Image 1 (spheres, rainbow over the protein chains, first blue to last red):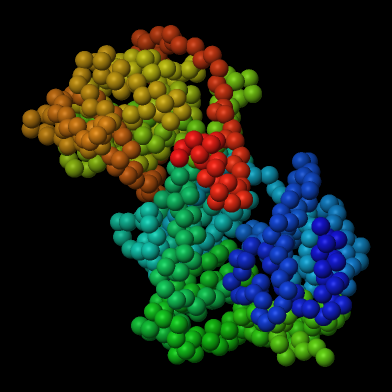
Image 2 (image 1 turned 135 degrees about the vertical axis):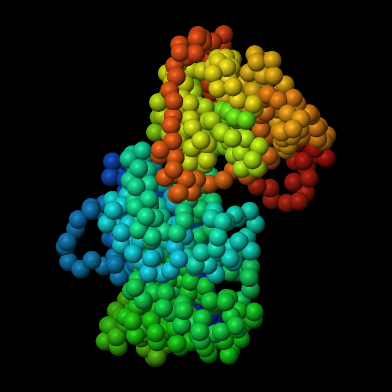
Length: 386
Length: 251
């Protein structure tokens, strides 16, 4: 398979034909969208498991880059899940970094260069992924908090008290909750007795059901006594657990159904994260619904602005303010979505000129003719080729 | 009036069932166990009746291994007032369960016994009917609506039957078994989980209740249903019509 990709890239490079690698097309920033006359290389059918090591639980799998990005996003522990892999370069060279060693500190770790490069440095044709065994005991609580500082305190308490079993800590505000309840069918409010400002979903994953459950229950009851949690429910079966997850995971769909939406995926230090949502609410007033939710455990905020229509005056209220704010607080303007086409020119909000210059040099070295996914990732000013 | 509710611990509804390699049953080791969904509905209905002021106490009963207490705790966290656990390591079939329930009814003297219409593990759909028979009580099975009249001491039960609804009027005490659309069970809230910790679960053995655990049934073999055959991709509408006509013979 990699030889076919190699031939295609070699040919396109010699003829200076631009290419766009495509996979699941689930990107949110236009990373897999051809802009002018690029050749699309779709690697969607490279989805076979080549080998599976039951002892080490490492699977070498043919997966393309964007699917891989999704895997990474889903687990947010990039280094753990990434094995070595095989990448094809523009000159047709096949770079074999596939190996199943957990530790290998010989020379530069080049695979990290390809992670998150959005197909701009090479095309990944084979990966080895570390797959921890699925643990049998999963517990999920859906909680209400009255203010953002309580959510934060709950997070640091959860890290301290649930450390080894804590597998997700998600938050959503009441605006997100209302959207889901109003726009998705079959979703019910687990805490209907009164309205709350924030909701937190905590998931624990472990190997001992009764031990994990007792631990989580004790933690929740203590947090409730301490006033961090206003109310909460604990899933008693898998059906209830998935209905709690459905609320959190249904937010993007509910937003789509509500109408036009401006989406921002930001990494911001946890203590300041929600200030941005509140500031945006003040800036936009009645003109749009500002919704905040995300992976609090990772400091990742999904800021979504739901508007009655796409409108330049609304956009002018949002950008560049959101980027400047994020930059000022040393955050990242793209936590897990990449930069793609839409945010390539915004890279300086999160990376210094020197850093971006070095990235451009690497790009030039690996892709001297600039044929790989052009106009993406790096700012257009640095990517002009003669 | 007191309401007694039977709840069964079963393999979770969302778990993919695996048959044991020796075909003696389904795998329950390291598998998530939960309350039978129809029993959840039965308990919810009892709690609603209590909330409406028509009952004073809800007693949840479960039978089987020690872990049944976990399922009872779920019931107590939903709002049941106390629990009864009949401990038995032997397999319990509907007739035995019905006899045990009858013995407990004689101890507790509830005005209403509510059960799920069936358990999702064995799909027997027998226990409610059998216990009504043993007690000589009227029964309203597959209830999709329950109304109680405290004055007249009757329960009105809507049943989903083929072709429509049947409405029955039962004199109390009575047995009701619940269908899927009767209600939507509540979640266990943290304050209620906290309260449940101090609620009492009383333990009995079948011997205490003078019931001999035996069965006239023997499970000969448990096998998986046949695997679904893979479909085919047809290349044209003509081929599709040809296959529908000549192979499937549906048009």
